[in-house]
Structure formats: C-alpha cells, structure tokens
Image (cartoon, rainbow, N blue to C red; front, side):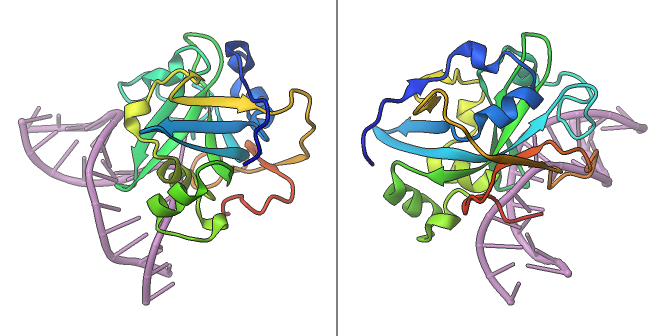
Length: 198
DNA sequence: GTAGGGATACACT
DNA sequence: GTGTATCCCTACT
C-alpha cells in the first residue's frame, strides 16, 4: 500500500443527520489497529438508520442498554451482535440526545489484506469485506469497541483527499422487514466490493 | 433455499 | 425470573 496522507475525519463531520452523513462516508477509509496490525478499507456501501421515525432502526422504540450509544454524540462506533454469529458496525451521527447511525455494509480492502484473509479464511479479495458481518470479522472488530471514539485509535475513520468526488447511487435498504422501500442505502457506483444480498 | 447461532427486548408469571 | 419471537447475516447445499 503506497503511503498517502490520511486525515482523520473531525467530530463535526458526524454532526448532521444519518441521511446526510451516509453518502459522505462513501470513499472514506475505516481503519482498525489491533495487536499492532493495521487493517483498513475504503467504504463502498452504507445504510442510514434514523431514530424514532424509522421503524427499521434499533432506536425506533427508544433507548435501551444495547442501543444507548446511538443516542450519544456523533463520531462513535455502535457495534452490535446479531444472528448468533455476526457483529455489525455503525457510525453514530447527530447530536447528543438524537438517535441516528450509519451501518457500514461493505469495504474495499486496503491495508492488512493478508491478515483479513487469515481471519476470514477466504482468499478472494471480493469475499473479505463485502458484507456487514464480513468486514467486522476481517478487521477484527467486535463489541468491545462499542462506543469507541472514531477520531482516535484503535478504531478510526479518515480520508485521503478532502474534496474527492464519489459517484454513488441510493437504493432501498436490505436485510430488514420494516420500512423496506426507503432509499437509505448508498453505494459507490460500479464497485466490485459491495455486498451481495438484495 | 435454509441451518446455524446467541443476544436482546418484551410480555408474561 | 422465564418464555419466546425476532434480528441491519453468512456459508453452505
């Protein structure tokens, strides 16, 4: 991986609503350093989840121990365990007290690809991070990082060039049973690394 | 197409 | 405290 200047995204990047922040996260880079090993990937697919007005959101029925960080200030990680096997990572958005988060659905692997292959027991680059449960496994992210501040190590988000243009499309979210028609899923157009389900 | 897997939330006692 | 329906999924057939 060639070294380029990567700037950590500031807190204010996450201050807007999940619907606004979600497309802006496309093209940004998610990094995790664990045991001295860096793994990272470019965000190519996300979904926005709002608060009380979004029936598909964990925050829809109000604050609980699980979803509490969704109600905190933006710029933190909301990580939960589901289906008995998988962790999913969201990025909390908005101000303290208002719920909202962006689910990271897929990445394009950048750093630590050999480590990802070992963790995933897969060799194809397209199989490493092309789904929300896959990417947390590849990057070694689990619930211990729930609530982590994304402007600091070991888990953070950054960008290579501030004004880069990203060509994206909005489509309905997937894997949910409520509010399935809302176009709250955002993908980089043409990326090979987006998730498969639809 | 579906088995697998475990946490969570909520309705009940 | 217990029962149970559900879940922002993956890997296999």
